[in-house]
Length: 400
Image 1 (cartoon, helix red, strand yellow):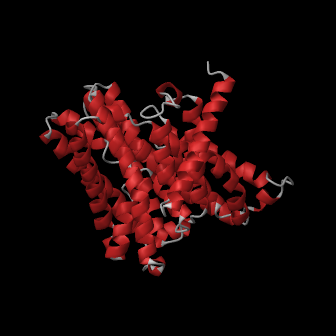
Image 2 (cartoon, rainbow, N blue to C red):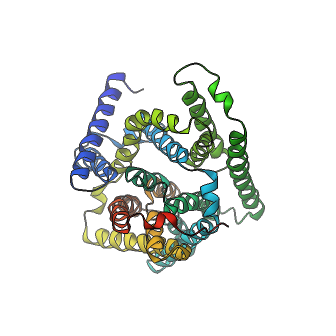
Image 3 (tube, rainbow, N blue to C red):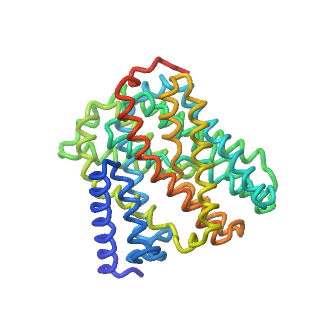
């Protein structure tokens, strides 16, 4: 049982660390998310130890707050994303999502096998290279006021496809580790369910809200509309997990549905204080999950460097090839937008450790790779966006 005063002290430490880290990063002309992740490394178990491993375990107050924070972040991103905008980049987003999974999975699996893993375990390692952390890229794009760019729409659309394919691949490799074999029917059912959920909720919900959203105006409270759409956000976040998808996919769909209402801009303003309070917890906790002690050797650092380079190049290549129809500059931006692994890689690493596939060192390397990709991407994205200016906001219609 967590004592209330201990929990409050920990919340204070995490929140003030996020503010200091974010402020320092912004003064260094870096996105605030970089400072928040770095602050997590510093206050976490690896350096000062003000946050212990037990405090960030699954189901603890900090873990729950971090999950709520990223759910709200993707809801806010959805509020700025209209269905019609995503339709215009549908074909490109699909190609980016598919190639952004296949290329990292292939390169990660080959590297793992050449490093001494058998093919079964190599596929598990490869799964950690696959899934993009939409939360980190979304935060950077939001900070830089770039959510309306064509490349941003492609990244967000591809992230949904990426999540579905990553979930299926993870299901395959977990089954193989458990000796259950390859259950094609189960995977097909899961795929149909996930796609059906996104189609019915995303397409049907947005159209229904566009057709009639006047009922949101009927409650008389100042924040009644916000309360209604937040209820929708939490509900869809939960339902998406029942289909094997990340909770943030449901939250993003809820925001996209709410973006079709007449109160869109009011809702965007009202949700900002919640984001300021809760999203820093996600990024600080993400940074605190790395154990630097496992990397205190030349061999470990060399392996970490190789793994991180493969992770960056493979996602960049997949995203770049998928978005090449937008032009090389835009394709590069999309490729880097798909690079962060963040919490997704951490989750897969945890499953690998529990299954006996990863040693403690390999676990630390995969987690560190996930976090390094999360820290490298924001400044590169910021540089690419500033260098590119606004010329790609009017990219050609690539309706799929």
